[in-house]
Length: 397
Image 1 (tube, rainbow, N blue to C red):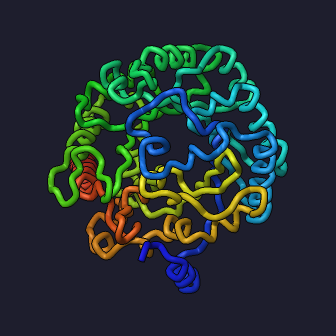
Image 2 (cartoon, rainbow, N blue to C red):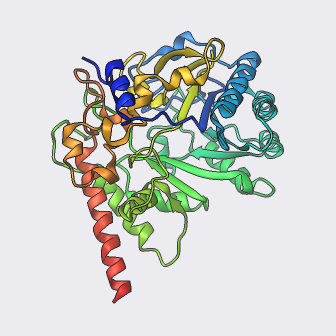
């Protein structure tokens, strides 16, 4: 039987193992299509192809209904802080007026006193001065996807005809880094490709002086493993790659940027909380609204199977609380209660948290498995733990 089941989520709630945590981050898919054809994209290249049957662009009425539902959820649960992410596809394909309308709709709907932040996740190719003027006026932070230098980036992040996008992305980044837009620059997102030199990639990202870098493991599952991550293999290519970056980052004479993945592991090792949902046991409080108003779980679940991200709800007919009751939401909020036996008995379970939820899928058992990256995560976490512990001992002596 595919896990998680409704019976499991009911039992988890009744026993107190899962207490629903209200959503605080809302991802609005302003445009469901993209102007790039990245070969690792979980939306277009993996199991769930529902994008084909949805509107390309979120209608203004859908945006306004989503804003109403966000406000409804805030009032129902007394949520004090809300983060709204404009996503896609490529959200800037919706046009700068649509982005401004979405921000204004959410801002107008929320009760006074609610702390609100906006972020737009983009491939960077459409960051013109006119677009940046709108983002600045609306206070929308910007995260850009960049996989390294031209050779590394263009290996995967290309246009449909095969032309690389690095030159366009870096031109957009140069505009973003210039005044008065610099304050909007929030993140660089980099998908790990072990074929690229790790330190070279990291240093190429540093050229743009990003406030934060997020390294992302390629999406994959036990049924469709990521590159070089054969099921059951002991090799740790992703840990080896990330350890090289960690050593370059951690050993620098001054902090050149934040790396949330590494920082979260360090915080967890020291008894704190994670800032990312790929490690740790904190409840996930993200929900997604698709272009047609469908309410979904985290959209990387589309890497697993058709309909994996669905909740059976939409903003026109249902409050977000209905989606919050979905077994998949429960599994992403229940912490240790949602881990398989292998993970429960693992010495790094509290830090690893089973790894990213989408990476646990196996066709016959669903999500009650370790991450497909289990050996890599164990090696990386152990290395960081030992490195930080040795550093603390040397400072104390």
